[in-house]
Amino acid sequence: MDVSDIAQQYDERLRVDDYEDAATNGLQVGPADRAVDRVAFAVDAVVETIDAAVEWGADLLVTHHGVVWGGLDSVTGREYDRVGRLVDGDCALYSAHLPLDGHPELGNAAQLADALGVADRAPFGEHAGEHLGVRGTFREPTTGDELSSTLQAELDTAGRPVPVLDFGPDELSDVAVLTGNGADWLREAEAAGVDAFVTGEGKGKLYHEAREAGVSVFLAGHYATETFGVRALRDVAVDWDVETRFLSHPTGL
Image (cartoon, rainbow, N blue to C red; front, side, top):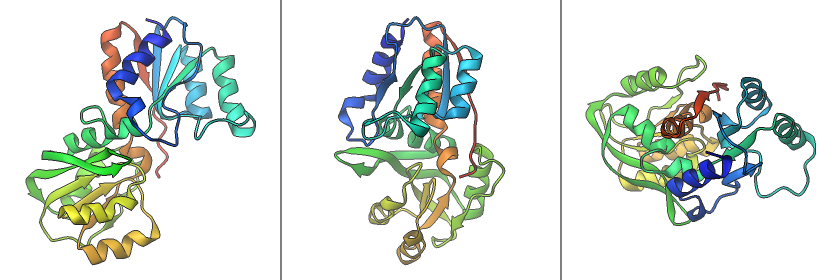
């Protein structure tokens, strides 16, 4: 396979053209016709992961957060450092942002919901006609402490505890999951009648909104909640006769 073949496979599977996104989804840095033997996967396309991919000999790096946001008016500063390393290392870059959050099977939210044992799912987190998360019911009711412990065990939080806004009932049954920066969807979670909302990071307003809504909010980390999607894309690549590697670089945030 070459870079364009893999990009097309992911584009179609993730429906990248259907999402309105500040990020450029798809192949961000060429060459498109390069044959691919090794594919590296990471959450963020940053100096550390790009250097690790190039050192390993990757022909392609696949990430959730790429280097192109809202287009590129110039390639200077931090963008130059990142793009320059890719070009010098002859490594292409493919990135999927919101399409990888919202995919009902491969997406960050869906995969995290799998880890939490969430059943009877429905789409959640509407954005420009698409959904970025899921909601459902725990297979077994849980407490806030138990859910926090499960998140701590399942996620790479760089050793930090999971902050909890503990305003829901003692026993949690219904949950909404939207990874990364999901604070703006708390009102939708309230309207859906869930007891718990699992996301990555919060905003100052979230405390009072959660308290007034009577919803427990679990801030499990932007990075930690978004490792699932790229790992799922790695699993897809296993069938393509390429060598793969996941590059872990947790931020604790």
